[in-house]
Length: 445
Image 1 (cartoon, helix red, strand yellow):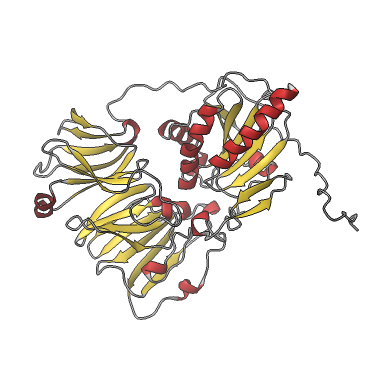
Image 2: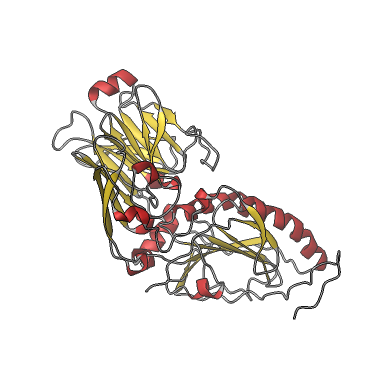
């Protein structure tokens, strides 16, 4: 039986937990292996991530100001914990580290050894370790950079006064990058009027540019002003004349959709204000639009950051949510009630628009008549950890299929769906702000 604590007395202090050592297949962005013992004297922030998780990519950007502010006191270590087979490929991981601008050491942990040692349960998970090697906080999901900065502002002076803080240089060593005309080209469209063997417009994500190539593959011009553009679509000629631009660009990290005029290379913002959408915001803000496609009479947007499908009417400028609830998972049903998982690409095919949900290895289609009232669904599925493909299709009908009553087995709720956040105590004994509806990774092999 637990001892009685007198009213008003402070709660008993929990036993400090020593941070487990780091173990994995290898290291990137550093000269050699790092260890928790070797990092003693500095704060260490472990970022458990995987490169196909859009929430993890958001956290990379959220942490940049914290890394800069505490460059001498804090070492950020990415622990790459793959969810799919492709993510466990060391070559693919090295490319992702370069593409997404990861400017800190990364531990390659394909067998989830360090993930399990720190009892991580969600992508992303952040763990803060103090200069004495003890875990002081753990966070799940995105949106915690401000809490980490506040905690560091509190603890840095304490450890400096104790003499346990030993500021130093970062162990980060940037990879050698060979210059190329294109770096991580993400999408390409043939230029209007070019015909066979004509020019091509490319979304050059690695250079933050849209690049025009000749029929021979030579660079004709580069158009800047983007932040990792990933998707392009050409407007029909009559629509382009009416609106004054020819190409729609999904400017992913810029959290906007832009219009590009080919005649003079001018760029205008069509949707989004450059700030990531958060719960409570309206459609004036976007969250990692990954692709765009002309289908029907409007532009469709794969809104990866909110796990949704949005639309833009170029003639009126109206931006609307067409499908998805911001819940992350696989749930068939009426388009406005369906669940997606990181909508990443769009492929119009006649009367269907196909879209993959990359975080669940699935592909979904919607009918060409617009958002159907009650779509039917058929799902061929397997566990994401087993890496079998999932395919979903939707066609108009009068009743939903049985799949609409089945919730995804491994998804409770994503942070995006959380209507409120609450203060709770982590297993490390420190009160933190966490979402109580975070989802856990599947455990099947």
